[in-house]
Image 1 (spheres, rainbow, N blue to C red):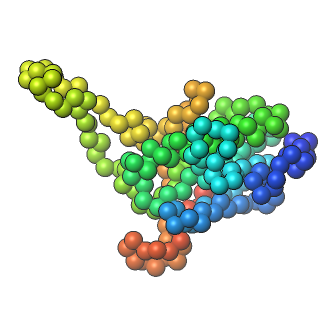
Image 2: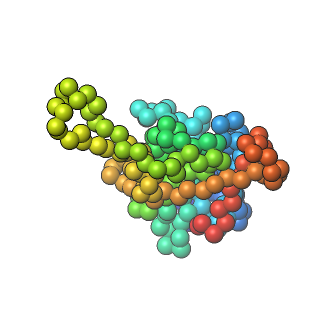
Image 3: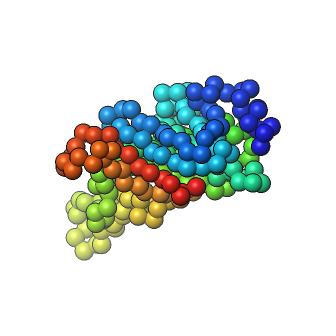
Length: 210
């Protein structure tokens, strides 16, 4: 691990890629759409990854999640975590979140490749939100609504939007056929002001996750 840490320090701007040097670390979102922070506890064998302006310039998908980090066990086997923070999470937003996870996954693979590290087999995608508008009954929607086209006596085929199925099944599709486990976490008011729909910072504590 010492050699990997040394190589990371030689190759990367520490503002974007660096090993965690303390038992805990924070990932902070400053934009109004998800302002707040997520706190994690981990050993120092954790590589923290950010993308400049939340995108990797070379990718066709210019959406990228807030951050990623790789936690290495004693055998230097890494588990990749992807993190995105939102204020109100609804179906249209979650569809974008899936793209952000994929962008950050590919960006993380690029970083790991430069460190001569293999693609992690275990990937977890974390979405931290202040308000959940996703956990409502999933409404089936018809593929074809025009009965003049399909005929009055034919059965209308129904489908569920893919992003809702991913949410329900707690999984995230990624590039190269990889699937990440979806972790859902509510963020709470940092001041405990008690006001509904307050404008305070919203935080989440992930102690025990890693």
